[in-house]
Amino acid sequence: MGITLEPLINGREYGWADIIVNIDAVPLTGIRAIKYEEVMEKENIYGAGRNPVSRGYGRISTTASITLLAGTVFALKAGAPKGQLHRVAPFSITVNYQPEAGPLITHVLKNCEFKKNAFDWKEGDMSKEVELELIVSHVVDKSI
Image (tube, rainbow, N blue to C red):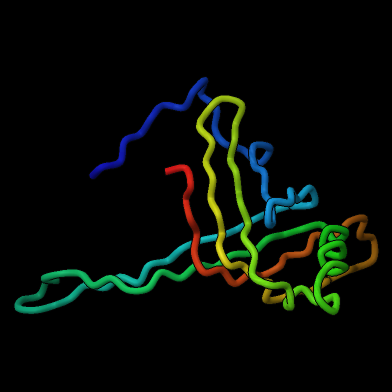
């Protein structure tokens, strides 16, 4: 199958504290979450009989979002054209996973743009997380 599993060095798993996220090489300190996934279209191709005779492969689509503290969002908006995040030119987001002991894993989300910017405040909020939906062309795994 080609996949080999290596034991973790010192039994340490990757955790949130091991993640560093950059937008165009600028580290984000007000980040609360990042989510991204790639989905490849696959389908069975049928011929004679009841079982597939081959498989077809199609597009890979990538979805992503980033959750930031409101202060970080306001800072991004201040530097955006006309103060609107959806007007920011495409950028890269680099996610580095670096535990104290273990290999560095680097994923680069390419050609990111903000799609949506929504705020939801309520009485008693002492801080605010803002999830920003992204459009992304693809993810490059630089650790391979």
